[in-house]
Image 1 (cartoon, chains in turn purple, orange):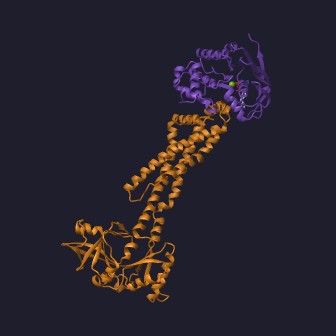
Image 2: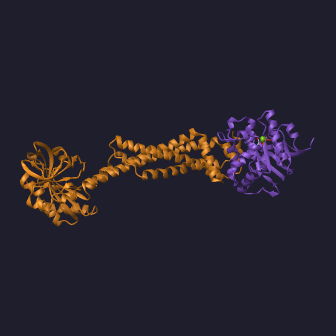
Image 3: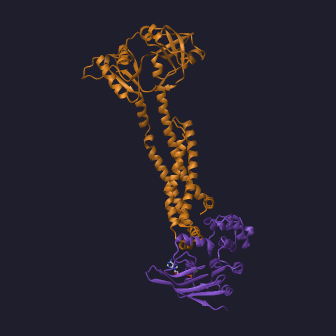
Length: 223
Length: 404
Ligand SMILES: Nc1ncnc2c1ncn2[C@@H]1O[C@H](COP(=O)(O)OP(=O)(O)O)[C@@H](O)[C@H]1O
Ligand SMILES: [Mg+2]
């Protein structure tokens, strides 16, 4: 479902030296896979995810998502794909403060045409086990619960692909396990998931592992 | 984009940061309320002009004799004597553009009835006076040409005279004594109020012929009212009158007029226009207040955008287009500004009512003092909300998401 070739991304640093974050990387993630992306800090994991999530564009290379070449789409179409086909989960949750869980989850539906946004949000929150916290505001929720609201938000438009950038980076071991259970559940339900993590135990439980190092992408053998 | 959904979220966002919302709405409210008050003051002034004109009579010229400058005659009786009855008749007859004229002989005198006496202003005049000066009778009738021809000893009195001399009872048919001369009261004028320092309701109006022959025994007039057919001809009529009077009075070309002509309407308008330095600064004050309100809105909106980088990044990530973000921040500015506009109109209206009640400055709430400021607050939102909105719309989602 995800296939990319020769993806190159270079940043110009303040001292004008060029930083080659991704050097012509190729890769493939099958439909229904639960792929972990690992690598040292600053190796380009987030950069790759932003490109695959259509938030960023590579300097060169091709990218096929769900069988469709998306490298050269216009911004409107890219936004539509982000809205319909991709769910994002971030390390910092990025929930709107002073806004209830349900309303946070409806946010992606503001930019789509689906009917009954409230019902969908409630259903999405039920899937992450937060049926009893629908009207709580973020500051009334624990870190793990906040991240679950964020996952519900990623799910609300029923996307085929979930991109999670260190979703447990700010959470302790116990809560990390809860979140991992949710991802495993989504994986069992057939969703394609890409999980960036520093936690090798979590990576070990994924169906495949991609390691980024020195601007190159390696597929690690399953242990 | 779903407008209803986004509007709801905008309202949520505003409600979520109440202090910030109220702060910027307050800035707009101050600007708008000052516009409302200033418009109210303007409307009041306009109304005052209308009322003055109503009281005075429309398209009216007043001809007065020049005061006597000779030192021997200066003092109490220094009233000019140059306006003659024949002048008045000639003006009505000979000058084009004149609708009607009314002569006036005026004296402050005592009126007596049943052992009481009050001081009144006695005006000897004609039937035309009522039309020219916008007088009408509340009871009885006004002076007519028959009274004038017969030099009848009849009088039309003002409501103040009725109040003070007759204790409010109907005076029609009663006989008052003025300067020892008995006058039968035939009418009472409708209440008019105070104009230019004189109370228009304490007049006693008698035929001009009676006044000149039987009461004060003079052959000159205190003034002549000339009503022109329209405001436009006023200047021309003034010139014609001046020429006619100079000729009648045989004034040599190198001598000044022995009379002067006043266009009361023009005077009132000019006085109002220059009147109160406030009116001259009104547009600037409103503009200043509005700009201050707008700058407040701008500052708070910029702050709001900066504080919500992460939110904007997230919205872009989940499918918002830059124009959706633009629209959202414009809507928020519009909501805040409308809130401020409503509050400002409310506060300004209260200000007008309080001002009208407590001060002598005439104020009035007119419909345009509501719609105009509302339109202004919308304009304000767009003018000062568009920069922050564009700034928000141009953010790069990745960068925006990093700021937290
Ligand atoms: N906008 C940018 N401008 C310059 N350098 C950047 C920018 N974004 C990321 N980088 C650099 O690119 C490298 C990879 O970043 P990132 O993909 O966030 O790494 P990771 O997520 O693996 O920690 C880092 O060295 C980072 O400093
Ligand atoms: Mg990263």
